Amino acid sequence: VDSVILVVDAAKGVEEQTENLMRVCRMRATPVIVLINKMDREGLDPFDLLDELENKLGLTPCPLSWPIGQGDRFKGVYNKHRKHLDLFSASKTSIASDIRSFDDLNDQQIDDLLGPLARKLREDLDLLEVYGDFRQEAYLQAAQAPIFFGSALNNFGIRELLDTFVQIAPEPGPRETRTGIIETQHPKLTGFVFKIHANLDPNHRDRIAFMRICSGKFERNKFYHHVRLDKKIRFSAPLLFQASDRNTVDEAWPGDVVGLYDTGNFKIGDSLTEGEHLFFKGIPAFSPELFRRVENLDPFKAKQFEKGLRQLTDEGVAQLFVQQPGNRKIIGTVGELQFDVIQFRLLHEYGAKVQYQSLPYLKACWIHAANPDKIEDFFQYRREHQAFDKDARSVYLADSQWMLQRLQAENPDLEFRFSAELILEESSDGADD
Image 1 (cartoon, helix red, strand yellow):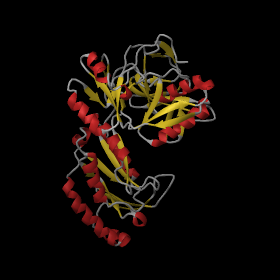
Image 2 (cartoon, one colour):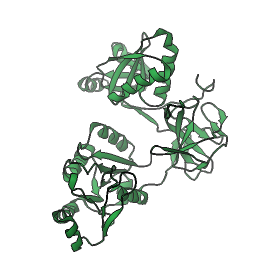
Image 3 (spheres, rainbow, N blue to C red):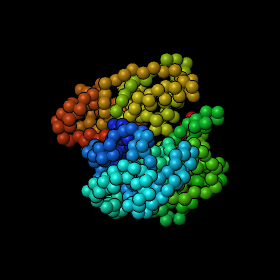
Image 4 (tube, rainbow, N blue to C red):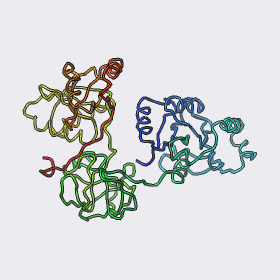
């Protein structure tokens, strides 16, 4: 992605998953805009929320809008970026209609409409001066994070966010491949698949590959080169998605994401071009935090079990690790819900009934060394902690932070990485079965 809108619940504040997402953004120096949502409900004080963003996420917050009241008293937001006040009427289905608009914050009508909230708004805005002015260059360098307040359910404050996002967010940028840089101005189409989702429509059992266009122009019904499979492929009904709506699209441009109906041709990281042979870099797999061994309960469904696991992990729903001997399969996720999703989909989409066994691991570390023998020596007495990812790379499954830190200190010749780049190579047999 070129930029991120991070949504924070005003009642819950910064949650663990938000911290995980922010670590990814920091690693890639991705510009971040924060929406503090659900201001129509009682929650944390806005200033306390700003402190959390600063202390827990390491952000340098710069509020560009400010809430007027909270919960039942929430009346709208002040657009600090444009020094403009709109008071809204709630709407659950469309952008809220204005009640009144003001450019002068000292207008007496504001006091008449808001009562004591008007004085509090002015006092809060004076306190916000400590956060300084918005600097677009700092935002683009991920050194400053614009903050907006609102309620997505009632469309309070969302227009301020979207208008500013369009104005300040970066344009689609260049992308790195294994052989060089692809600029957005490159005349020929290039793109990569970053997400796969099966059965978006349960009635049709479809499988959609989401492709980010990096350069050139994508056209419906035109043949493109699938680099890994080394074959031509075309799409008669490419899709553009907006919320729950999907529409067939005839053409798309750099920065657009198109959905491509897939019959098993795609994996995450696959490239489409107009004939160029290239693979995009920088598509990482991050360490899961929850691990369970998955067991097939019906030996007659072994093929369906294997296929389902492969396709679901290709989608990025979870990561699959294998322990030897015994070819034991371990699923790693970042949330409990993903285990339920996998179990449900294996049963209802592939006919494979499975059960889980909880495991004590809390982190997966990809082990690297200049001398491969060092890796083998490390695992010689730690086989119960060794697994292999789908690219057959050695992974250490850590069961405590203390032990992990000790091993890092005792093995300076080894590098413990908590993410790994997806590896794709040419296939000699076409699409997967």
